[in-house]
Figure 1 (cartoon, rainbow, N blue to C red):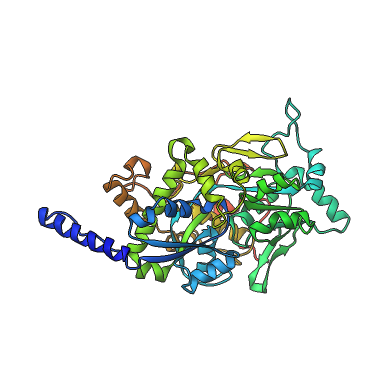
Figure 2 (spheres, helix red, strand yellow):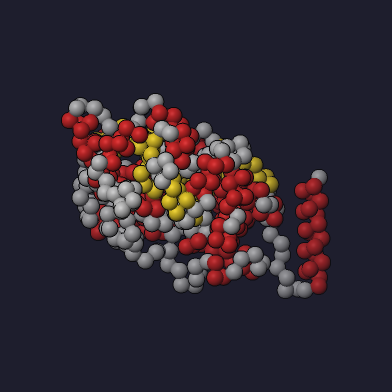
Length: 455
């Protein structure tokens, strides 16, 4: 009844406005008003929670249900089969689905949910073995960032003793998989290759460290059980290891690749084509949520942490979530450091779906064999444009500017924006990434497939 009344009121208001001013544009209605979105219990699902809690979805005439999912595969499958209208996704999921690594489906994204937000944690025992190889500052604390060079002697020792060195990541096409692999390889540790053309999707061919999938909330318990010796995951599951006293986060992804793109909001291509106005309205609501999360130098973060700690969202203790969400990060117990950009939701054009971000993930898929054969630079560009949709984002942003909800300065200059960030060099290994030259980028690595390499 309430929704019918609201819509009737909007129709009446639109009619009055049109009679008084023939230039007033007609009100657009969502093709689908009742929506169900999925997420995984991680702090970077925050834009969805905030858009719901602050009424931004309802401002757009959308009535949204948010539903936690068991794991990333279930989440993707439910978007593909239509049980979910959209979801909080790993940046690699729409790309992996589109190129057919794993489940084949056309998934697109018009909204990047955040930058940074992940960490790599090792067990207490591994940390003690690493510490002797890590330089100390004048106060006796480890010098950061900690490179995988300090882990290599530990991995070599395990290999010499015939023991597998097992590590966890959350999904084969996850940012965590690529960040963990990047960090390990930069320290001379081979994280292994995939060979889908040989039906080998283990990712462990020629590996020094054996990476396998563990759902994010299960990472601490799997580490505590000794099944894995380290993992890469989003928050709050690194800080959880500190609070439980079972492990030590050694590096954040901010230190591996400064301001790296993390999650996206994904929908099926068919859904987007059937519901273009609904899609645009969803993006508008989420842009507003992201802006709220970063507003006034993160002043809203304590309130956001309180919301996220609710059981229907992340469901972790307030203090655990706040440990990273409010601008600090705890490494070894008691070693709390300022990391103001550990979670970025809106600054630095965080919500804009850059083609160069998509291409970086595709280069890592190629580097580790998930893409079996060499591809041209044009191929990378074509896939990026097929999956990442800055045109939809720009349409949503322009409406928010017109409605005076946000300002033009809050966004890229849509008249000149190419979708490519300038070359980026703030990686743990100092290698520069230029999204317009993916194959030249792949040639720069000592470990990884390049050119015409094929396993």
